[in-house]
Image (cartoon, rainbow, N blue to C red; front, side):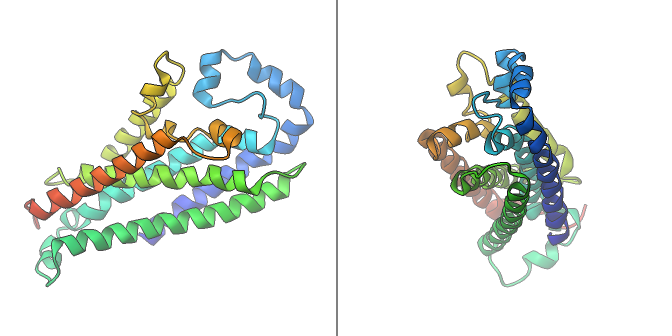
Length: 257
């Protein structure tokens, strides 16, 4: 899976470079930029995660556009989660794998560890590149701690979608392509979070969409994460991984179609 990981990592680095490259212009025309964004309806600002008090800082601007990077990371993780347990079935090599003197539990564990290591490598390379780019375009110093905390939210969201992808894939006897399932789930949850971000029951609705668990505006204001959503994320990951093990250990895996 390293070729796919490299492509996604480079794509996210390119997005970060694109967004951060406009910061010097934003900083030089901060008041005009704030007036422009302030003219947007409050619901639109909530959907885009615009914080007018911080938008002129590099962390404020980056936190606004970081949702697009998180979306890309979620697609990568969902693709990885869906494909990691269905690869042999799709390529008709399941019989070669399952006749080995290795338990199914060990197969799932090895694949899960490999997937998590891929995400860790992606995040380390992406964080290092983004940090260097941010330091190259900054007009004033920014908090390295807050920058790291914002970036960790990408990893947390990816872990959730990795687990959701694995849990989803085990219910398909034959999955010819991972993209329809991956894109459908990711974009569906993203749109739910975006469209309902300014509703009356916003706090309750946030539990539906993993994209809203870690709001950059909260991270910048409190230098930490919201405990209820950290717990919810851990529960989702734990339940999804447990479900993946349970179903995969007992399902019939078709070697040929």
